[in-house]
Amino acid sequence: MPDPVDIIVGRNIRQLRAIRRVSQFELGEALGLTFQQVQKYEKGTNRVSASKLHQIAVFLDVEISVLFEGTDVPQIGSRIELSPDAYALALSYDKLNSPAGKEAVKTILALMSAQVAENAA
Image (cartoon, rainbow, N blue to C red; front, side):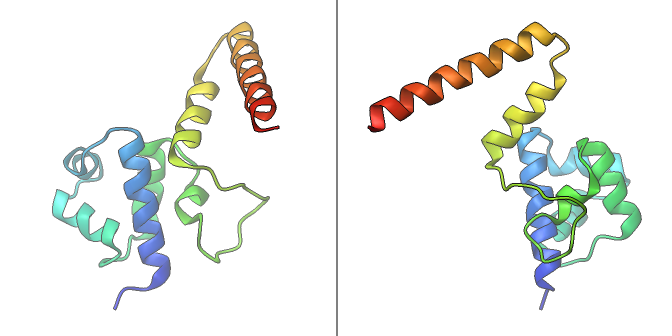
């Protein structure tokens, strides 16, 4: 029976891989693994070694702690839970090089949030 932490880590790997539109085959190639091994990691059937966790985090461009979100493993600092869409949006926002572009995104979201609040009232 897989350990619950292994299942959660596998689910997080699968979600992050899907957000980035990376196939199991592509992730496996980057890690020197077969796609079947990636499947076993994602199902929690096989545990992911520390070195592979590091390689996965680097390849998916996330902090390694993100792979443990949802477990009871203590983490430095606090993180809020984000939906896959919100996480993808945050990643896109961080990649914006233009301060004006970032400000425009914040303005649009603030206006849309205000409109949703008005419609709900």
